[in-house]
Image (cartoon, rainbow, N blue to C red; front, side, top):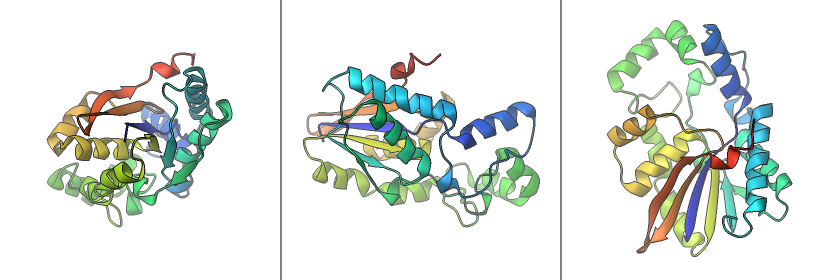
Length: 227
């Protein structure tokens, strides 16, 4: 690929509800249903629109030749809103390998709710470590790496010479960094400690000497127009 850009979806209603619950000291976020069906918050739609407006203003400098999305609603809606603001952007295809980390029976529970209702899982998490812990019916970060492992090489072949954008989730952005840059989980822990992957942020790789090289991580300058 000439360039690979990883985009975290815009703020979701779950992102907003989890932050509100934490701020209020509440265990429950009020979000129910399937994680895959969680859509964008009003701010998330604004962020996605700002991304599209930025792309519309950059001409051909950053516009993707192809786009692949997680099939989760919040990722698909992010790209749809961006396209609405920038006519002519390519439609996205979806790839299930780009789904968010599966949390199994703990899906859509806040960290506080997990601690309160599943203390045995909290203990397992402490025992196994953040990256080794697998929730019941869910995935460890190692499992996410395993399902993503073939993706970079396949994408490089399919989108050779093109600028590819991927719209997915923070876990996907981080685990693709691990694979593309040959990082360790300790490296990823250090990246996470410096701050979260921001909603609608850009992580950009460019082709240099036959391989992808990180040019930007967690960039949000395109969101400066949002008050």
